[in-house]
Length: 179
Image (cartoon, rainbow, N blue to C red; front, top):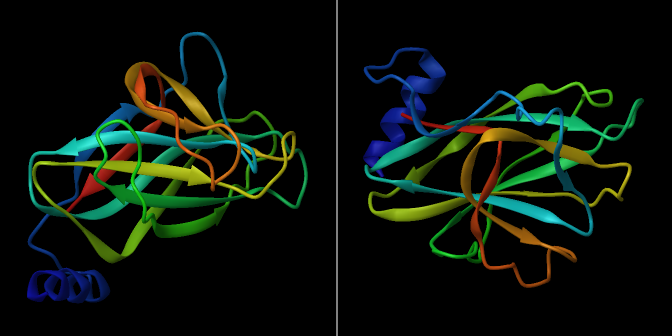
């Protein structure tokens, strides 16, 4: 508890003895195959898994995203964290933030989300970053495909459906940072 209080105080007063560092990085550069991505909508949620070797706090998440929308209103995406689950994300999901993906069309743009309050990341655990949305297909956000491979899982109907068992494949563009 005191550990989290220290980070909260240093965040608000602008002084810190620690620096942000990368917990997981699949890159923020689109795939050599071109501009493509995973649809995030009312029929499909997408999750990417990472493993932490250290105890830390989640500081921020950078996502490379674009949309199938060329004018307002832009799609809203819920960015969540799940602890545990080697093959699929495990409930409950902790909402980090709901963000409007203010990107017009297929122009990959970095979206940064700060974690406040700080969420604890424990050493030796699997974690999942999950993107969900209530937007319809063709009115949705896309999470850009990177040129690396990562462990991914998909929900192919809606947020209430079972997740497909994950596997290594094309990765979403993400950088997860701790402090």
